[in-house]
Each structure stands twice: as C-alpha cells, then as structure tokens.
Amino acid sequence: MTDLFTQPFFSLNTLVSKFSPVTLSASNISCSRSGRQLFSAVDITLTSGQCLHITGANGIGKTSLMRTLCGLMPNESGHIQWNGVLVQQVRDDFHQNLCYLGHQNALQESATVLENLRFAATLKGLAIDDSSIQLALNRFGLHGSANRLVRHLSQGQKRRVVLSQLELIQTPLWVLDEPFVSLDDAGQNSLTDLIAEHLNHGGMVILTSHQAMSMGDVVPLVLDLQS
Image 1 (cartoon, one colour):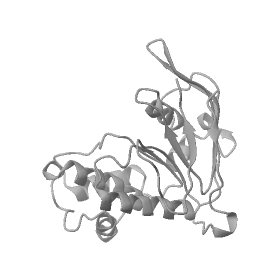
Image 2 (cartoon, helix red, strand yellow):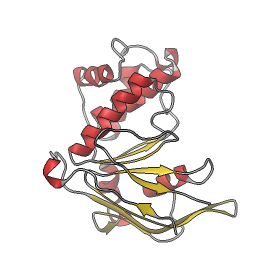
Image 3 (cartoon, helix red, strand yellow):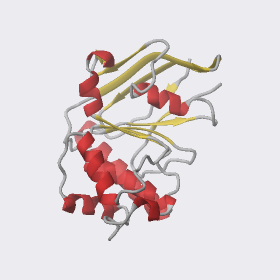
Image 4 (cartoon, helix red, strand yellow):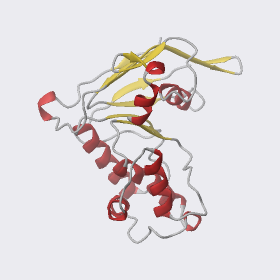
C-alpha cells in the first residue's frame, strides 16, 4: 500500500473561497503496464485548499496515476469519487471542474498564442475576451506575444502559454504533470504564486515535480510512489 503522509495546510479561517467545497478521493487504485505492476493500493483524499505532490522515480507511474485520477485511463481496481459520488456517475460535471495539463504542451504550432488560448477556453464552454487573455499572458511574462505563432516561441515560452490557461480557466481542480519543466526562475515563481492563490481560494492541485516544492505558506501533501 502506498502511504500518503498528510500535513496541515491552510486553516479554514484563512480560506477566501470562490469555489464550492469539493473533495476528490481514490481508494485502492492500481495500475500495471506490459505485465509490470507500477503501483497498487493507492489511497488519496483531497479537499478544498489542499495540494498533493506526487513523487517517485522515473517510470514508477506518476503520470499514469494522474491520468487515472482524471478518468483518462481506466483504474484496474478500486474506485474514484468526486464529492462522494463515483466519477463514472458524474463524469461531465467532474471534467467541467477539472483542468489537466500534461507534460506535453499540446499547442497548435501553426496558430497564434491568442488562438490557442481561445480554443482552450472554448473547450470548457467559456467565452473569454482578448484583454483577459493578455492579462494572463502578462502574468507569465509574455507581454506582446498574443499574436505570435506558437512555432516561433521557445520551449519555455510555450510552457508559459500552456500555464496561462490556469489563470483563464478557473476550475477548482488542477492536475499538473511536471508544470515547472522548461521554466526559468521568474516563470517558476509566477506559477508558484498562482498555485498558492488558487489553494487559498479553495481550489485543489495535484502535481508531479522532480524538484523540491517551496511555496511559502503552502505545505503540500506528499504521495511517494515506490516500486
């Protein structure tokens, strides 16, 4: 069984919630690949204002676990619940409240930054004006980049475009696979601040990272996957 070592996060009286209280729980989750067990008997309970940092060696199954929690891969055992109800029974509501960003940027290279972010918002049923998109880009240091073609951006800039979605698409649950990759110090600080704000507003975050997590007052829960 994989242990989840919990630590207190924000006390309830420090939360300034803009989301309704939410809970994500997983019980006895297992995954194997090509006949090899990646992880088994994983239990998770995450509530508003909490961050879960999934750690472990490369190939241990961190991405597979995150994709399973998002419903992008079937769970081989156990069950996953959103607000106490099986995800399969509230799939549309769950996905509407979820923003999953994988380690691949998944941007349309031949489109502009603005067009990519408009498309991401449309997938969530949102109509976001250009000024809001520009503010999100400014937060990640992408001033004047809205009309640039994605293929002309550096890897770090592309990563910042992807992460700008978090500012625009305000879902309570963020699931982020290696979000700090390709970011310089300024980009990492911008993302850290954004995650802290999201948690302080009653959101939840699940992420993987090979680097130590330092978010000021934010104390993540840690799930260490072991072979």
